[in-house]
Length: 264
Image 1 (cartoon, rainbow, N blue to C red):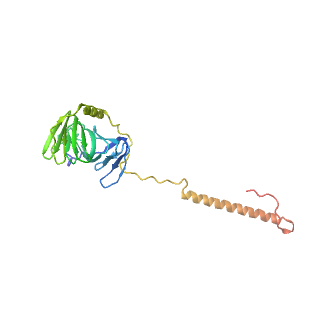
Image 2 (spheres, one colour):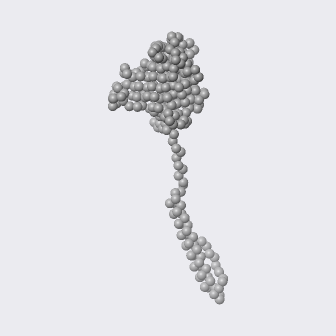
Image 3 (cartoon, rainbow, N blue to C red):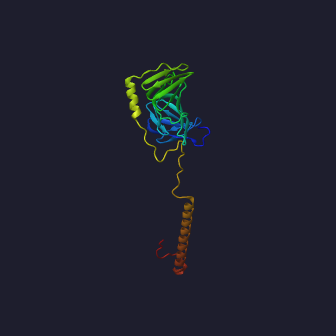
């Protein structure tokens, strides 16, 4: 569907509800720069959050992530097919914590996948949480609604509502266990938070150069002003010369005296 169909196309996500220091990398080879609300992000872009920072990422028809502190998330694939309603979302988490809400997948080949160095979590219309420890790379996946598969190696574990599993690097997913009630309450609270609707004027994801400050007066205006002043000064000087010569001509004996007032 996504390789051959003409209707399939890349999508964009936008960020909102920025709290704290959140930075963006437009591509793996570009630098990091501050995020702005409603900034558009394409495939290959990454989001990084500092301590005590968080941000929302939303795309498609109801997909969203709440990205917690000390996280790095990369958008690998965002594809949609207008003809069939199919969608393919793949994101990578280097470290940190996220809460995902996935829209119901409308076609059999639609996907919503979170990839980590430890395991892969995929959904079928659900809300779940991933936590990847930055040092140990231990992964926990907890399901609030629906169903999630967690795959490591050749083993796949299915999680249903209210259950979670843990995976260590190089290991297999552990047997699912019930999520403590206080954690479930916290996840329900997170799920109820909604990212604001997309604004009419999105902010470009690429850093923009500062606009050049145009001088209030252009060079043509300056030259015109200088020319006008030169003409005016020449006219005044000629007028003074004519007046002085007239006065000298009228002095007794031909000369050296000036009578009267010169105004200009």
